Image 1 (cartoon, rainbow, N blue to C red):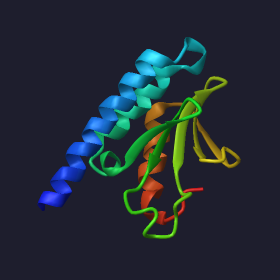
Image 2 (cartoon, rainbow, N blue to C red; image 1 turned 135 degrees about the vertical axis):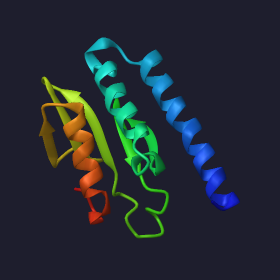
Image 3 (tube, rainbow, N blue to C red; image 1 turned 120 degrees about the vertical axis):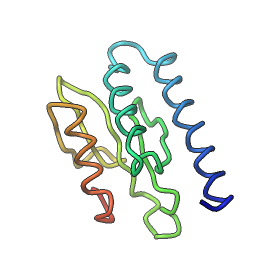
Length: 120
């Protein structure tokens, strides 16, 4: 692994920890931070998804690629959250959504479609 890749990995790991801690500390129960953290932990456990950059957007776990801007897909993010008793994967604008019964199914969908280019 090149030094540049190692630096990206370390920075990414710190970001995963930071996002997880912010969900634990800053979100009330009606945002279901426990369910979002469940998906975050599953993403972080996946070598493929761990390479993405996590962020928080409107109480949702967002994931973006390092190379999104270079690929001309700066708005190609996926957001994961829990709403109305279902796990949800959506685009950043939250207009197109996929609903799932489990966190595992939600994360599996993201992994399966990650290389399709645009998820939503």
